[in-house]
Image 1 (cartoon, rainbow, N blue to C red):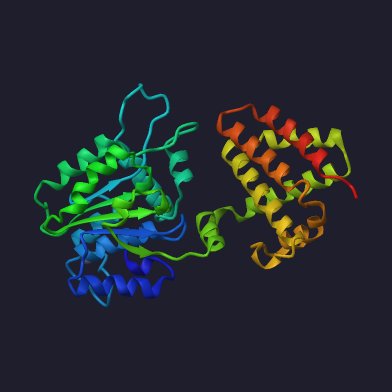
Image 2 (cartoon, helix red, strand yellow):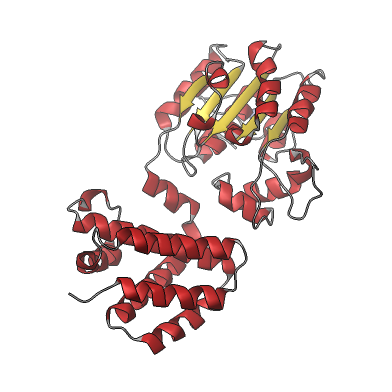
Length: 350
Ligand SMILES: [Zn+2]
């Protein structure tokens, strides 16, 4: 990945290239940015620039053997660590990132590095489990870094979401952060640095990757705008039926939603939560931070009077509860029937 493959962040990309040009490469760094900010693609572009044998105009060449191997996530000196797990694993069995490199490469190829934690867990087929970074993984990192560089350039370890390390793993990796190794880069890419040990934070040089949260969301879901509109239609339908107390139609609505895919159902509920919050903000006079546009804004403006202090929390709690049941593989027909009838009680005619 070249810097030029990443849209925006021009000032930041120039600053990063300049530190490499001037030989100021700190051995322990952290890029910080919410999912969709591009912190992960930037980390990859930075490592590629660092090891490129033909840098030009503040960017890697993209064609030298080093660039090609890094872009394919196949460079022998560039290692990746990310939270991993396996559904149905044996008790006490520790997972390491190398076992999931194929899934990792596919994820990158599909998204260009623009993905979030949930998308990664979905790709690993995790329903009820989260990923984590184990002590075994940390030992593996130290073992890999103790080899000489294969290709003569920098050895790099990119740790995506270091906040998923347990404390044993974090303490093991602290040793590397404390003692710089020759031509070795340790690059953390964090979405929630507040979850990291202070001892880790104090040893890394931080680069903040700024992002507009709304832009970030759209980057993560570029192909889904059509579906998002359909989701929004389902939301409007649910709210209209609720408002008019149409119980039979509400049950039909639930049956219809029960037939769409599980991932889509989860996203639908996430959208509902966003729209209810936005309507509440509009009602509270905070329209400018509601992050809505076009028909969604029009509807939420009309709908806003029905969302207030008396029902906003209960509505969101109902949506989160349905989301939780879907994540636990609850029966979608039952979940949505209960959900639609519960919501209808909370939307009251005035
Ligand atoms: Zn190159």
